[in-house]
Image (cartoon, rainbow, N blue to C red; front, side):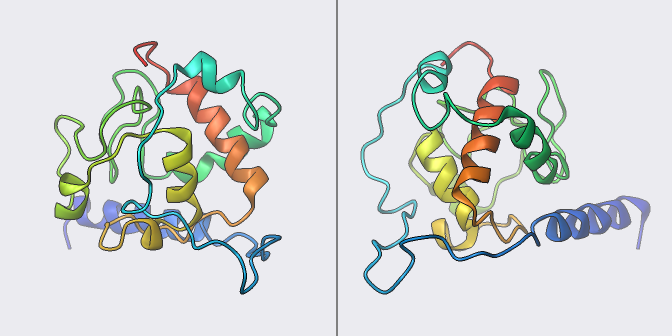
Amino acid sequence: MNTGSRLMAVAALVALVAGCGRQDEEPGGGPDAAPPLTAETLGEQVVLSVTEYLATEPYASADRVNGERQAAFCRACHSLEKDGPHMIGPALYGFFGSKVGARQGFEYSAVMREADFIWTPEALDAWLHQPGRFMPGNRMVFAGVTDQRDRNDVIAHLLEVTSSGEH
């Protein structure tokens, strides 16, 4: 195994372990709960500016310190800074408001390239909750974040630190 393959394996393991947080069942998760949102059921999306998202709930009152802490699982595979490199996953700077699977220079899986939605907080929330259920066949090795508050916090953090000001 060459050094690059070893580094990718270690990074994937780190991402997997980072995703192994508590798996508390969410309120309303019983048999009468609405089915989880998927890429196919996402429907029409309203794309706002980052400023508008951050001014609305649940992101206006999100815990930014917890969001930064929760984003450690993102940083295991993605760069967040401007001009950051693609890693195991694509660079995330400026991704809100962009089409899924369309970042230049990253080799996406077929399911990501063929998907037809925009990265909004709503889409990211569903993705972070259960990536494999949201988009079956994607290559992201991550179990998900079951706690809604943690997802809100990390999304607010990502809105702030990855904003290019274009969307």
